[in-house]
Amino acid sequence: MLKWVTALITISLGACAVGPDYRRPALDLPAQWNDEVVLTAQERAELSVWWGYFEDPALKALVGRAVARNLNIRLEIAGARDARAAGFRAGRAVSNGGFTA
Image 1: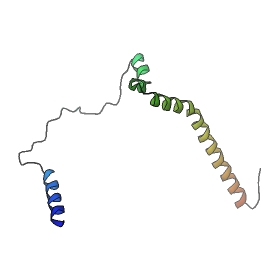
Image 2: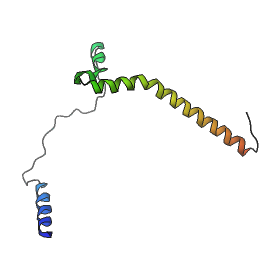
Image 3: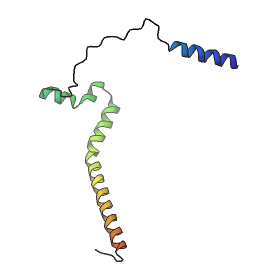
Image 4: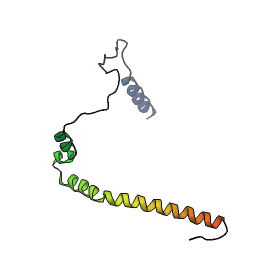
């Protein structure tokens, strides 16, 4: 069994080797990355519904649910911030020896 494992590891590692005549391919890369993409209004509108190209009802339903719940997420984040602020106020009141409204 050990011979088979040793042989398998040796063959696997040998497959990763690069020959002595390997030359790195020449790449035509720009001098600087340009992350500015110029889109027309129509292209922007088409890109905003990219999931429609898959014609998958499950994907459309998931995206629709996510868009509908986006406002809920914002409200939850605001509620968490309010709770954190209330916790800080409560902690400050306890550290002062009394409660404040």
